[in-house]
Image (cartoon, rainbow, N blue to C red; front, side, top):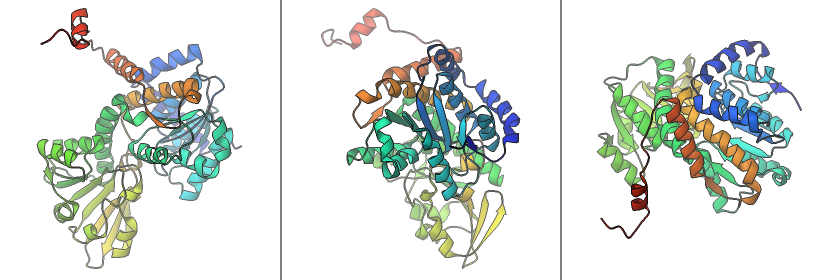
Amino acid sequence: MKDYIIKDINLADEGKQRIEWARRHMPVLQKIKEQFEKEKPLKGVNVVACLHVTVETANLIYTMKAGGANIALAASNPLSTQDDVAAALASEGIKTYAIKGENEKQYYECLEEALKIKPHVTLDDGADTIALVHSKHRELIKNIKGGCEETTTGVIRLRAMAAEGALKYPVIAVNDAETKMMFDNRYGTGQSTIHGIMNATNILFAGKTIVVAGYGWCGRGVASRARGLGGNVVVVEVEPRKALEAVMDGFRVMPMKEAAKVGDLFITVTGDISAIRKEHFQVMKDQAIVCNSGHFNVEIDIPALTKLSKKVNQIKNDVQEYVMKDKRRIYLLAEGRLVNLASAFGHPPEVMDMSFANQALAVKYIAEKGKTLDDQVYRVPAEIDSRVAKLKLEAMGIEIDTLTKEQDKYLHSWTMGT
């Protein structure tokens, strides 16, 4: 087994400085790390993590290592790796397999290398590890106690597997923890997506029509921040309740076939394939910009865009110009991959603090109880979610009320009346 596959080990010092900066903004995870150092709840546990290799992820890896875990880390997206962070982790003896810009073959070679540690627990951001184990390395399943999944797309895949009886070990849907979903997805994706688009293009949002495909927590965050910058935001949805919510939140709602005619900038956050496809490209304005912040690059039908084009120009880093046969130009950012990670730094550490605190505690839970669970997808236990929220409030210096005995009794009684 190789110790690491990275771009350049000489980048380690730069990575360590950036990891330390993030650590200072992740107080909840640091509290858990201190606990793990004392208790060693992961001693002897092999963990394969397929996550975005960022400064925030590095602090999660250090937390699990402090708990005694033996870890192998691979990237969950070919464009999200921060090479200096990968170097820093490798220099600390962590098995790290990630290079920014790796092709699909290299991506899976790195994941295959990580699996050589024979995991007891898997961590995913998109369920690629679980899919690979179930399709090619079923011999590993007998030793796996369970896994954790970080993102909406991965949870959707895993629930489909469970429904078909194909899932062969239990998984905690970390994405569904309220201290992850409501904050990471909304505030993290909202801010980092705008950051990535600005880094790639430096466009002015004010006065432009911004089309947001999907109005889940990520879509809510992106739409609200685009509006905050002066954008005229249109929401595209397929789910009636979410569409109604978008209307009540003050956004215009319409089908993509209509939004495609008026949009200046398109952002997909659906978790599904082909949210923007051939018939939409055909009616877009000249110089429309298209990007994705919904995990996989399948949300934009890039093969269809390529077929409609007579040539493709690389305008600058993360900006490709597709010249249509009628001479219109459509700009694709970050090859359709996660623009917030490919063109920026991903979510701020303050929100990843909560997400990765849930991850660390969920790994501990799986390591201790995984073999007693059915092969299903589980929500994060409520006590973990509440503990993370409490620690975050304490770190922010915020106090809240507690129920009096009388109030608690009233809320749990059916005899007290109104």
